[in-house]
Image (cartoon, rainbow, N blue to C red):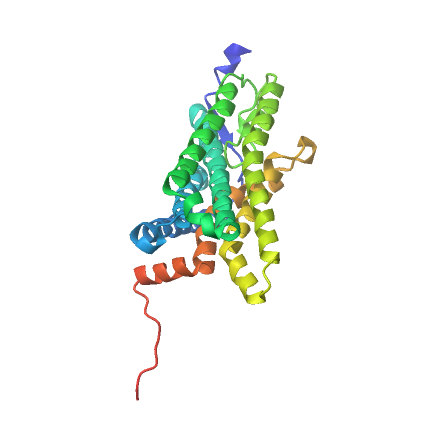
Length: 313
């Protein structure tokens, strides 16, 4: 068994096996998505760093979310583009490196979203104490803590998989080396890995989701106590874009990882994986750009946009 396992030096990603015209079309689609992801997220970072009036916790977290989205998308999409135009194979160590960074960046995004939810709670529910609560030391520690915890989480789940024996098929029926897809190829017992993954995922993802859920319960309770309909609308608008991003991310992530194997479907897996690892990193900056007035105005200023005004006749 162990001698056979050494022959598996690479894996084959079969997430896409179509004829040439379809592959060319998909290459162009995902190239556009990746280019848009890089452009929009880099623009968010530049705009926030270059405007002093955006130097507050909310936009500090948003700039880090944009950076995580760039990293998250870059883990899978460049290799996906190579699959369309060159080779479907990925090296043995390259596959596990991709798995590590998928877990690392994916869970870091969840923690950044949790930090943003707590920031919105402090701003809406504790406005008089907001500056004291969300001080510079706290929001920087939240970001550093997010990266640190998620790095350890990714290591804890990736290193044990390296000890598994892969002596059979090396075909991964997915477009990336995600944990469930790789684990399915092992010819040794994987239940300890699966149990460990679900326990750690429950702790890491569950804690971040709990912070978001509790924060929004308090936010909604506070908004409902506001008498003015206009004031309710303005208050909710300050966190509506974050709520949209959270729903997009968690709905796909939970379905992909937290469902029983009996519900497995390669096509469905691909769709939900695309949503949270490819489409969401592109949509996040667009959502914030369209729904956050300060960001929208800063982008217009960066691009040299001047509104049309009526001229005297």
